[in-house]
Length: 437
Ligand SMILES: Cc1cc2nc3c(=O)[nH]c(=O)nc-3n(C[C@H](O)[C@H](O)[C@H](O)COP(=O)(O)OP(=O)(O)OC[C@H]3O[C@@H](n4cnc5c(N)ncnc54)[C@H](O)[C@@H]3O)c2cc1C
Image 1 (cartoon, rainbow, N blue to C red):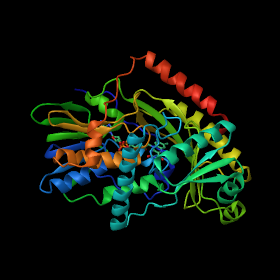
Image 2 (cartoon, helix red, strand yellow):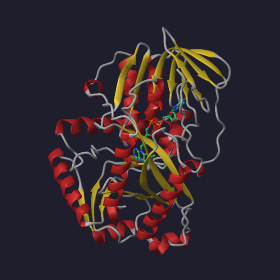
Image 3 (cartoon, rainbow, N blue to C red):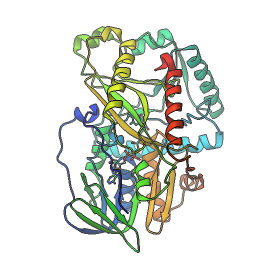
Image 4 (cartoon, rainbow, N blue to C red):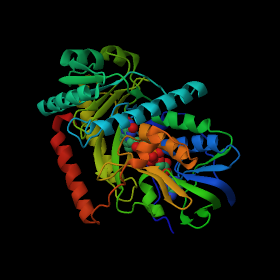
C-alpha cells in the first residue's frame, strides 16, 4: 500500500526555532526489528518508552518523517490540561462518569510526564501554575457559568476571577471574567518532546527524517522509506490522522489545522511596563477563541484560527491568513506592546472525529494504534501511548479497560460533502466567537 500523503509541516514554529539546532538521527539501509512505531510525537514517545520497559530485549524503532518536535507535538500551546475538556458539551464536562475517567487519564499523564521531566532533568519550562479560562463577551461569561456548574458536579477545585484580578495578573484589561483551575501544567512543547526523545531507553532507536512511503501487511510488516526498508514483527501507528494513509479509519479522522504565534522576547523595559505575573496561560471561553500565554522566557504566545486541511498537510495561504488574526488578537489584548513583532507564526495538525472519540487498540494482526485525541493530545497522547504498550503486554488497569470500552471514530460523509460541512462549521463558529477570538 502506497502512502499518498506525508506530513509536511512549515518551518516557522516558534517553539522549535527558539531552541538550539540539533542533529537528526536518521535510518539508512535495510533493517529488522521486533517493533516499529510510526510517529514520534507525544503518543509515539510514550508508547516507545513503555514498550521498551515491557520488552527490554527487543529492538524497537521509533520512526518519524520529520524531526522530533517538528510535528504537532512541538507546535501546540503547551497546556497539559488535567480536567475533562469536552468541547462538545455546553459545560465542558458532559457525562459525569466519562468526565471522571477522562480526568483520571489526564492526571495520570501529568504524573507520568512530571516523573520523567524531574528524573531526567528535562528543561522545558515546566510550570505547575494552572490555567484561566477567560471570557470577554456576555456569551463567554455564560459559558464560564456553565463550566462552573460542571466543575461543581465534578467536585473539582476552581476560583472565579473578576476583571480587576485578571488585569493585575495578566496585565491586560481585555477579559471581563475568568475561571481559574489549579491543576494544569504549562510547558514549552518542543523542548519537552525533544527532552523525552533524548532519554529513551537503550533498546529504542529513534529514526528521524524517515518517512514511511509504503506498507505491506502479512505475518510481519514491511515498510519502505526513501533510504531503505524495515521489516518488523509488529507495527504501532501513533501518527494521528495519518493512520488513514495506512488503511485505518478511512473517512473517519478529520485533520484540522490550528495556528500559533510567538512574539520576540520582551525587553526588560517592556516587562516592567507590563507588570503582572511573569508567566500564565489563558484558554478561551469559546473554543473558537484565542489561547494566550506569557511564557517564562517572556514572550507572548497567541493561538487562534482553524482550517480544514484534508490531506493533513500545511498551507502557506492559510498561515498568512492566520497571521492577520493572531496579530489582531495580540494587539487587542496588549495595545501597550504595539511595537512588539509576532516573530513566528505556524500551523499544526490536530485530529478530531465526529463523535469526539480516539482510536485505540489492535487494528489488525500485528498492528496496533492510538490517536485522534481531539485537540488534547499532550496528555491524552502521552497516556494512551503508554496504555497501548501496556495492552500489548497483556497488562490490566482501570484506565486501560476504560480506553478499550470506548466507541470507535464514526465514518464521515464522503468528500466533497465533508469539506463543505467542515469548512462551513469552522467559518461560522470562528465568526460567532467574535471578541473571544
Ligand atoms: C497550534 C496547536 C495548539 C495546540 N494546543 C494544545 C494544547 O495546549 N494542549 C494539548 O493537549 N494539545 C494541544 N494541541 C494538540 C496536540 O498538539 C496534539 O493533539 C498532539 O500533538 C498529538 O500528538 P501525537 O503524538 O498523537 O501526534 P503528532 O504530534 O501529530 O505526531 C504524529 C507524527 O507522525 C508522523 N508521521 C505521520 N505520517 C508519517 C509517515 N508516513 N512516516 C513517518 N512519520 C509519519 C508525523 O511527522 C508526526 O510527527 C494543539 C495543536 C496545535 C497544532
